[in-house]
Length: 295
Ligand code: HMG
Ligand code: MG
Image 1 (cartoon, protein in one colour):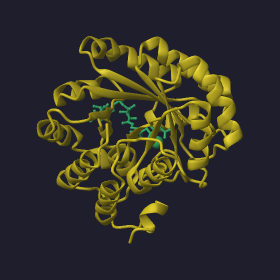
Image 2: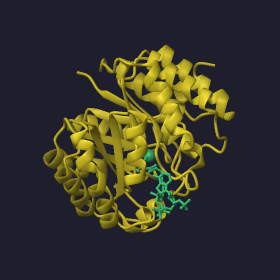
Image 3: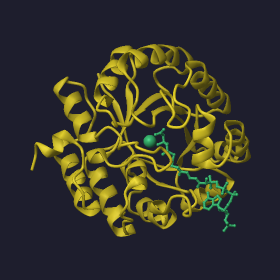
């Protein structure tokens, strides 16, 4: 059995760190992740630098990464609108991720529009992205709870996932943006999502705010999910989700899967090297438990 790990540290991780890193430091982090054996790395975001200053310079970073790794892994970038799409074309990146949410208030705070408004924006550029043979990922945030609205109904998540499928996205990542999910809730929603989306296109994206991310991943695995998003060392969070902690730590996830004899293609020692590098760059202790066990 194998699992596809989708490393989001250079995007989801760094977008929520208070220290803005140089392009060189971001590049070195990505280089170490490539050397650890990752197949998918989200390396930047074509969003407004007024909203997310940490992602400023993504265009030059991505050009540099793509020039260095012609036959590299799949590199991804977030694209919220037509302006971001123009930048993605200029960068040469072949894999883009659009993002929306299952709750209206979060969407408004995050991208300044409603759920319908986000789809209107996607319609402005996704046909062109498909013509350019780009691979497209669709994120749905706040699938297990919203920092502004509280409970989120399953049907709201399924409706947004269905709309993304209709747009022709290649995969859908279901986000527990603020880390409130519990395994029973995961069991119920994942069963429905597997029927709607299927195991090839479905990813789960857990933030580890309350320490349940690995438990929720285990439950998703048991149901048949085999793609998970994580960030090196457990970097990050989301700037428009107050109190959100980082993603589940890649180091902890790779350790758990390795011990369960599930293949990931990632070399744990090299992963720890990448996480230690970024830990020293952001200059704060990262939450990964495995990292702490390897001083
Ligand atoms: P807006 O202010 O509504 O946009 O922002 P606008 O179209 O009215 O434009 C306003 C200004 O922004 C203009 O500049 C535009 O040119 C500029 P001005 O005339 O004032 O100088 N602009 C841009 N600049 C650079 N790149 C662009 C762009 N678009 C407009 N693409 C916008 C709308 C979407 C741009 C804004 O709300 C934004 O950038 N939001 C970023 C939100 C974000 O990145 N959040 C974090 C990622 S999502 C996440 O973390 C969740 C996830 O991890 C899953 C989970 O955990 O749940 C994926
Ligand atoms: Mg996230």
